[in-house]
Amino acid sequence: MDIQLKRGLLDICVLAAIRDKDSYGYQIIKDVMPYVKISESTLYPILRRLEAGGCLTVRSVEHGGRLRKYYRITETGQARLAAFVQEWEEVMSIYQYVVRKGKEDG
Image (cartoon, rainbow, N blue to C red; front, side, top):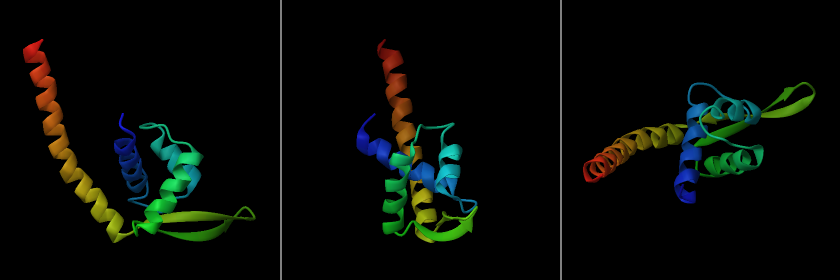
């Protein structure tokens, strides 16, 4: 898979994981893993990039004697998810054409 495409899809997966409730790194990884492999070394740069882009905010909460960062999606992040859904419908249409065309030619 194209690295830029995968990077964008991972961003969307992270936003989707925190769409309905605030979450922290380890929980985000657990939520996303059934759909796509993601490691801590991949997740945290994504979270920093999304925060810098205004797609999420971060707050620290003490948990078990340590600070845990919780991430919350912003309106900008919600808008990015909505735009992705609309764009993906077009991508799926192209995919269906390519697959159908391949079956017709094969």
